[in-house]
Amino acid sequence: IHTDMQMIGCSETEGAFDNSLDEEDVFVVDFIAERVVDKQPSFVDHVILGKDTFQVAMGNLIACRRNLNITQKALKDQPLES
Image (cartoon, rainbow, N blue to C red; front, side, top):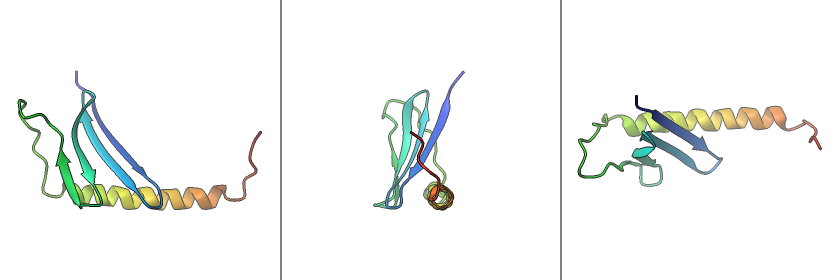
């Protein structure tokens, strides 16, 4: 059994999109350079990434920021618990 994990995170100014297989990075997305960075070692058969991988990651970043904005607005007037 293998574990495939995607991590998507964002702030108002930054974003992260990482993909791993069995706790080893397969690829990460560099949003600043607008490219996908293959993290697989040279001695393994590489997982082939689609040509639209960066666009998919960018769509996820946009959705993450939209959700962040909605959550910030919803929690803006909530009292802090002590």
